Image (cartoon, rainbow, N blue to C red; front, top):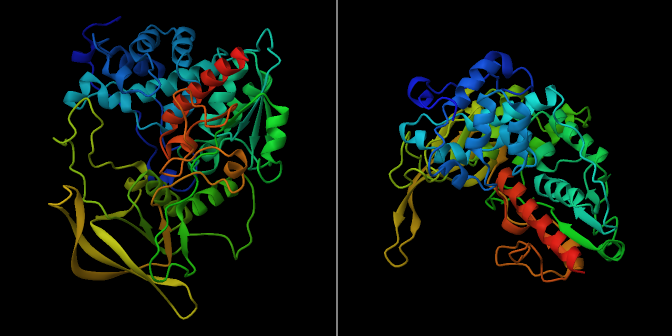
Length: 475
């Protein structure tokens, strides 16, 4: 620890966001950066605690105190080496991770945690800028071939680790480009897609083959893949959106959140859509149903498209602000989260249940009827249940976006062909080494856990890679 008193003398300083009136006019990343000297000072605030709860909180087990020290001492090469020892893609997590590590930081007891996520992003960006990041081509090859199905964070991580073990890896991606939800789900204003391209280019130079526009199970039967490859990793994500089956669901103007987000990301990439299928919030009153991160992404996208107004509703109660005694440090705090998108303009409401969609004479949604509810304890089960108030109102809207989360993998044909066991939640059932019930077939990421965080998908991809490597080594 270069400066043992820094946490006492240097306050937390965030880079902040670009001005609202500036950023809502484009899809550039909203976060700004600190200059290198300020960033070093922020890194110096790390106390190198005897028990590093940041490390404990991180699904990847990142060694935050070690690389914070390297950053403070301006050793970018050393910092990057330590960072990538546990995190394959810090340029992704440094942008979109909710920073569980910061919530576990001892300084978070005073709401002044080290800016770990921003420091992480700064390290990797300087590493690229200064030529530290170079392709690492394996010196020998084992001759074993592995097929990774899906190129999201879990699939990319699994492919990266297996390639470094010397195996021959091919990644199959059903979409026209790699990245999974990193590319098509997360908006450009949070993760510029050039960041993905930059890393994939390196993976290609290191020997990984990418086959895009190929859906295994449809374009190629899985039996052909299992014949040609020694092992398979299913990393197809959990793309089945949770629906809301109420009256009027079929009206025009009611869409899943991912329909909007995927389409806008493709538009940003240069793809054009006919007017009759283009989803646009321009000059419309937009209603986002669902209060999570995906809903927040819809808010930011709607504002950039020129929405007249944006309202976000949530069936759960409003979380407390600042602190929540039910989730004390060092656990993840269930508190009110206000994103950059919310700051751009959004009315947020809680404890509202959607009852029905109301349409106009053209069959387009014009209003949504909601009912005020409350959550009460069920004496018989001890669980919370909904108590209806009977108080309803109608919210005027011309575009409804359902951001209710995701259920299980969308794999018509693939999982059936694989014959793997499915758990009670509809996900691929895996063992501790991420192997499935079928020898030689493994699963990773959301396909095995349900929808989760990018950082957890990376951790799962690493675990699957080690399981596959052990399997291949023992054959």
